[in-house]
Image 1 (cartoon, rainbow, N blue to C red):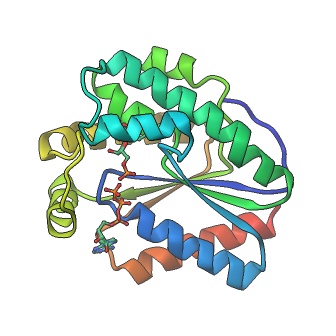
Image 2: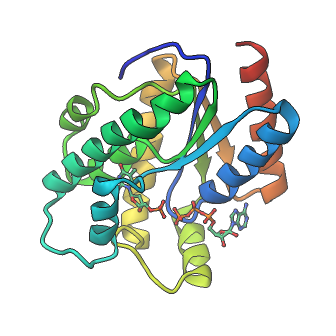
Image 3: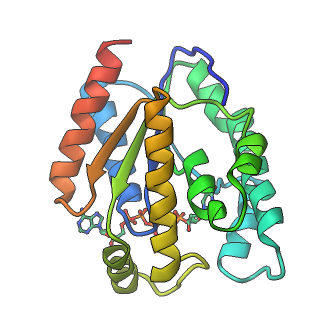
Length: 210
Ligand SMILES: Nc1ncnc2c1ncn2[C@@H]1O[C@H](COP(=O)(O)OP(=O)(O)OP(=O)(O)O)[C@@H](O)[C@H]1O
Ligand SMILES: Cc1cn([C@H]2C[C@H](O)[C@@H](COP(=O)(O)O)O2)c(=O)[nH]c1=O
């Protein structure tokens, strides 16, 4: 991945489906705006751009027959488009960008079928985050939350798949953590408030030590 200095900071949240990362992203945005008075862009992948919109149709079965190799490239293309049109302009203006899913998701999900080297290569030009927050929830708990709260189940939302996704997340966290990536790992089965509190403390230190 690429390292580049901006006046803004780039924070990514990662976890299995139902781990609570959308909830925590929204709470973090409010916290940063209120406590630090900073402008925040709340971003999400797949993005709302043209490639991300097509990916959503694949995830919800409205577009079928897309192979995993093609989907891997679509996620990488969406990411570069998202960086160019949304994330980097916001960072250049000094905003804090919170992104709900990023490169780790490609390793965790596409990594089930696609080899790691190829995922690494296709994400080579992606910007390295300043902080990755990994919210860890057991796959069965993720599935319970999804079943209770949703009418629609996406392609990856099955316990057997989420177990593989979780194993991949742990592999990435260990590998990238030992390469010096700034990672905060959290127990996503704790209360919403306790998780938010730990995230806000870590983000305080990131913003103070800039
Ligand atoms: N710590 C928590 N404890 C219990 N329930 C939670 C917790 N965090 C979030 N939830 C609930 O779990 C459900 C999924 O949360 P959320 O949408 O934030 O997850 P997500 O990781 O973004 O999921 P997805 O990727 O599937 O959209 C929601 O109903 C949310 O209220
Ligand atoms: C960025 C990215 C995402 N995915 C998967 C992970 C989830 O199953 C969906 C997104 O759903 P959400 O409810 O909006 O979180 O997409 C993936 O497989 N690969 C990726 O790179």
